[in-house]
Image 1 (tube, rainbow, N blue to C red):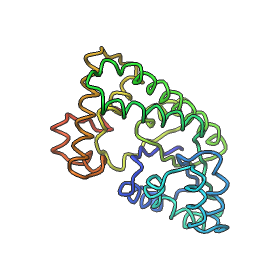
Image 2: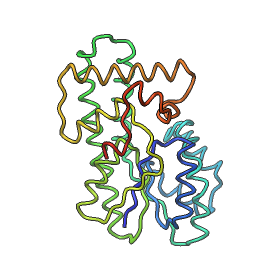
Image 3: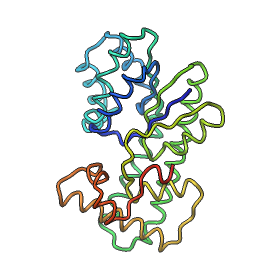
Image 4: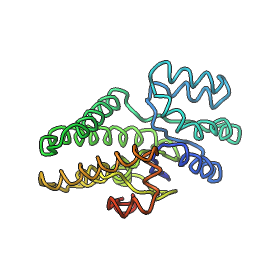
Amino acid sequence: MIKLIPAPHEEKFNNTAADYLLRDGCSHLGLEFPQEVEARVNDYARGSISYDELKTFLIDGEIISPYFEQGFRPILEILPVLYRRDKSFSVQCFEKLDIYNDWVFSRDELALAMLVNEDFATLADLYEDLVKETRRRNEAIAERVGTFAESLSSLHILVGRLHAPYVADRLSEKFDVKVIILEDICLTPLDESIILRLKGFNFSSEELAVFLHRHREFAREAEKEGKGITDLLRDSEMEKRFRLKRYSDLA
């Protein structure tokens, strides 16, 4: 059984996710970290290194950003607890660093272009590059998770909500998969559009421009209010104002 948890990967959500993993008796956990750090994360879970040592290794090695570490801290802090409960507990890290870096570059390039370009039709190529890199990342995640799931009777997976629908569908072809929606907050307009594209929807240039415009205005609203994007994704007024979709609407 694979229990797949679509996650926005920020501290508030991961406090909820950590509580769930402790209650549910997680015996193996898949995390959105590069495969290259899997051994070091398991060293920490088993008590061989401290949390500060793990944190320094991840940040100084530019494996993750301080923001990403802060958001993931509630999950990382329960790993030794899960290991003490079950000495067979292990962490599987399923990202490929080069693919992840290409995806981040493509995402950031589009995000910057949206801020300075009023003609969204000219962003179609950058948008399609991000769709392509998201598809590539999805396939790599599904392949990696499928490989180590073959030898495990039970597995919990934390995966970004943008990637969760495709990964869940792919894994369901071979495994018993249950999607656990711990908090059904909204998607950004950009994530909504990419999930739809990966499901086979094609947009006209005018339809794409609407998605990108909604996303830019939503991001500007977060900046104006001095709040994080995920805080506004929990706001029912913002949901109505920007016509946001919840994850369960598209899963």
